[in-house]
Image 1 (cartoon, rainbow, N blue to C red):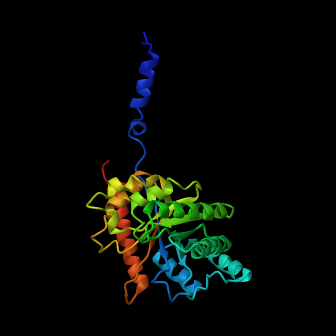
Image 2: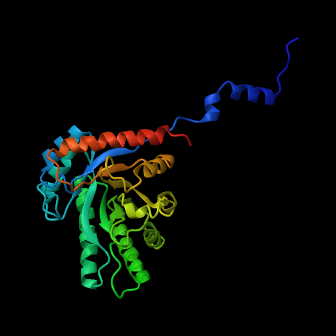
Image 3: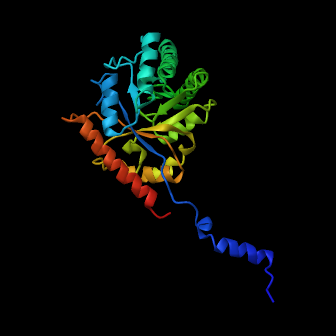
Length: 293
């Protein structure tokens, strides 16, 4: 006589026949490699940016603006110039990730603060017009004789104003951890007062964030506010910043953004140097994907 199986036996047998369901899918990374034009790209016009980034397989580019580089992506660029830049990038393998401007919101002079806010809005419009997704800004420094909490509140209020405007253009406000206000603990205090969801934190691979080997702990403060871009530096030779730890943490959380190379060293062949950094970055990410968790 044929034995009858219970529902529990059937269920167990089905699972036993499909061990991959229990073990889960293989670890993967959707992180991408890109480039910011400060400063290795300071002498490149748009066709050169596209050609060099394509050669280096850096298929996302953040354009450094407010410095009069040959690319010409500035606030005074005409509507026709903006449309042409957007068309040129759209017809290439290289995507405009966004812009990096130098506006900061730590001014004690209200006139200067208002000017910085309005300029940041202008860069949001410029990014939108050329096909970008967001703009890097700074908090930046605590000021002498001004209570820290007052400056934090001022920065958060400024970010909310810029963020509300940027949201109407589909843009992100990318707050880079730069200056003495750029530590993760301070950025968390700022973000706790930010109400606009498109205001995000842009990592800058700064050794100060390691804070005595505690990068992984400090990272927990801001991980839920991360932007989709990072500024990275010389991943092959910089021993002060824990690149591998950061990569591990980002892969673990499924982060899908761009690592953008930002370098200021004087090298004879910047494109080859960018390729070398990409190779090192790929090895680092492979270790993150293949490590045991």
